[in-house]
Image (cartoon, rainbow over all chains, first blue to last red; front, top):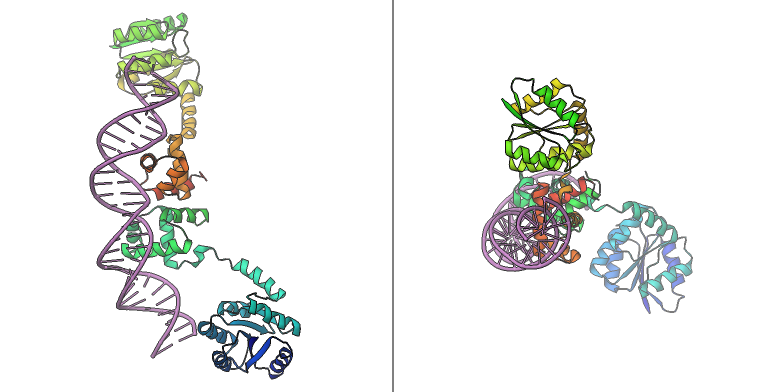
Length: 208
Length: 208
DNA sequence: TTTTATCTCAGACCTAAGACTGAGGCTTTT
DNA sequence: AAAAGCCTCAGTCTTAGGTCTGAGATAAAA
């Protein structure tokens, strides 16, 4: 039996889903909630295998609830079941630890299927959402150096000019120890092994 | 008195030049020769102040003679007096140690003037030749890395990829000690302080 | 034949680099 | 008020990098 909790502040939807799911042999609805906050309580108490979570609820949104649940029950599969699929909803949800992402336009069978899949460890993502994800993912594909801080970028430019840590410190008016810290952070962020590779990176990526 | 030796395998030219030069008060023709080889003998024996040397002679060309003379008599001023001014003639001659370079189309006075100037330490170069020299010089402006050996260039490319000495050694099948030697030589030839600057050099000079 | 240049390598030596840990001050966000 | 991110810096420790000296082997040039 797959233990399921349903969290949705629309009574009609919640009841409807539950009614359907109860007809399934291997599903057991062990709890329901009408807000994120209540949802957390129920989930932590019941420790279900799968959670059907609505986003956009009145008291405490689903994303926060998802985050909270994931930190406490990392093995719990949370399926986002929502009406919208804009980027502002999808990515925070996935980042929060959502396992699957389906829309309320889905058929009852699709929802059931998503639960079964989730239980087996397979993620289900609504095609429309998946599409948005991919494109948004690609454009989001941050070049490594874009995750560098201002200061780190300054230091990287210095490295790209061939300056030593000492010289960088003098140019930026900071201690060599600080420079070393920045350099270390740069190297790990760019995923390179030493300053020479960092310099090469800078030149290959047109920072000069 | 400026002691002069004239080397030219064209009897007419040689005699003509000598005839004119002898009318000059402060010039003394102490020898003449019709080939590079003979020219060397005469010059080494007479130790003149100035040598008028033709290029393109039958027995032993003027360039070899110039080289030979310069090694034995470094203070001797050798003036190349020739009909041609193509690059293949000019540069080897200058490299060989020629002091001035004038054409046979020059007037007698110009030749005399070149000798006087040479004696005083001033180089005279035919304008046409000078022009060619400058352009050819600029294009010839050897980029530092062109003075690197094959092997050193290979190592530099590795540095430009961000490889460590160890990795370079493995790629080129040589010991790390050898790599270090090459790296040191590269650094001094490129006049940079460390491998990072060498890598930057490689990228800035379009080696990639 | 002798010189010259290149490539190879060794040993000793010193320093810059980089990793890791920890920490205080600052600003922005929650 | 608390958390998070950034910048700053210290101390310790290990290693790669680089210099210098010296040297053998080979091949091309004088």
